Length: 285
Ligand SMILES: [Fe+2]
Image (cartoon, rainbow, N blue to C red):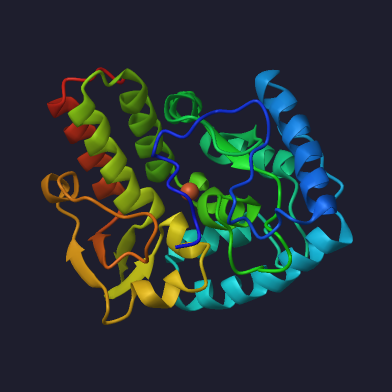
């Protein structure tokens, strides 16, 4: 997959650290741009200032215009209808990078969720503290132009084209909030692991049954040109989403996902999350 495991409790550094495998690591202009955006977004996040306006460079717009239409084509064929409708409703276009501040304002009116500017990976509990408060941390930087189909870290294409559209859905927004509150308040390591697995196999890599067809709603799949066709291919085992099984199932974030689970609806998932958290004895009120 082309996405980091954001649930692996990464550090929350106050300086930008690109991974050694990052395609942009030898590009001084790219690294300088990333440092600038890191500082700006971190300042806005820590100051609760909302997403800053970003003047995207021609190169960043080029990367968006190269990747976004290809994903859009795959989404039209394979993404959840609820996702597709939401993406159109938010006016997310394939030819222009959206401003998070505009998307955040729309989301707040539609589902009460707001976007939090994220300078990069955010530590697990801090990430979920934002989710619990009906915020969604979202990056504003782009991957490197030499490999537009690959990113070793969640970037704006992953966040905006993977996660943001479904935030307009009431059931999705509610289940996310409950997950966030449970993740922040969980004191047992077993409970934290169960919540991570549930999130992985739904928010990041979930499939949904719609009108007799298996469609995609997980952001890790929706933001990857390779993972979209792979997830629906014969190489992947797809099982009905049984929560007791999902929370016992391990995953490897460094590989394409060979086992996926299919939910019947977001209402179902919302009820399953609420029941699980109640069984854990975690108060999410
Ligand atoms: Fe993600």
